[in-house]
Image 1: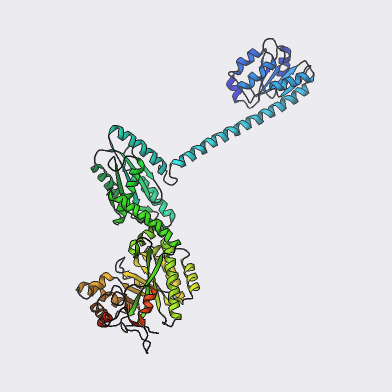
Image 2 (image 1 turned 180 degrees about the vertical axis):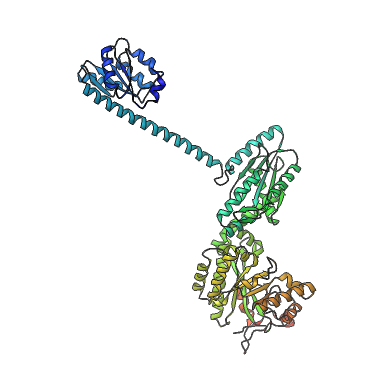
Length: 607
């Protein structure tokens, strides 16, 4: 019989085993119309055939010379578990049937054969075989699926889901292996941590999908910077790591850092948008910067932090003093989180003076940190860290609430409609619920929105102009005034002053400082004041420290000013004790001589 023909046939395959030729022939004639039947005269012949051919059904006599049918059943099922076995016997007692079932038979047919019962038994057996094969198929599919999913889970455990690069866990393992080999062979191994500068601006301006596209393209570019045997991994956020195992001298690392800089010079294509980004790179070298993977990685982090502190777009090799800086930064971050819980932040206030009348018309709220160990810290010591960690949101809310509440308290005490100016970080301004939080604070403190000025930097507005326009418009509808802080130090685009719904421009102190002595600074200040007035914007000069500067600004008709000439930032109780009210309810800044004679800042409140 042609085995291949039987395999490809759609008919079920049946093996008939009986030492009586007449029984074999009869069953073949009866079943052959709908099945592909094969007959043999002994169990031994059947076992030989079963080694090369699988059958759907085996019909076997129990009592045969040599191996009996009962002994044959487990041998058949061992070779082909999905084959169904039906036994034939001249014994009609129930004991033989039970014995056949215990051996593994599916059914039992007695002699003399009733052909109708035979056909029924065969149909049941073939149906059972169909179920077995389906069950086996499903089990195999499930097993394959489990293997596939297990492989995927194992892959995800050691690879980044977005870029498919090795993750931190796999990188650390490879780094450990590379260092062990390098130690035996006395080779150099380097770790380069690469961070995309100002990546947060990409996601905030263009969305997370655009950020993912930049990361994916960055991964591809970085893979082109390494050779076979090296590793490029993505840690988290915008941070990647390179493990270089073919280093012969530090010059190789300089070349690697320059290669990274070079591949990032081309724009990143995000649909129709093109984005340019730079990188900061921290470099740590084995064995000079550590003898184990954790130390090497930690020192690379310290070097990366130094690169970022220097403005980004540069690379830094690890130096011994960097760890101390990193530890100090970590300690400060921990202290800052505790400071929010323990109310260690306090608000100072600096007077804002009308230059024409000398009246104090408002104040600017400035945060300070009363650190339990380091004393009073100015913003420059912690604001950058607060922005990096996101704690600036909590600090910003605190300053806003404290400033609004204090201003309302002063108004209730008869100090007039003082305005309060609050600095707003870009991150705070760009929060989706910013307006809701602001309305909540104004409601809690009962401060009239027209008494609140929000100060924003140029860059925070220009990062996403369209979104900023919507928020600024809503602020104007509330009556809140908006000032551009440190004007001239950011985008310095005078044209956008006309388009943005703002009220005030604050001249940066760097221009004010030289306004009375440097013709270039004087010309620039004059141009800004003139343009702002033509656009119906107020101008406030920051950092006014001398009478000469104040006189010059008055000549230009600059509206308002603040600085040490009029008063340093001070606690609220100091401000209250340093003012007085004259009969005309007008506030005047005292002359230099008067100020020298007085113990504190003296002024008169204008209602």
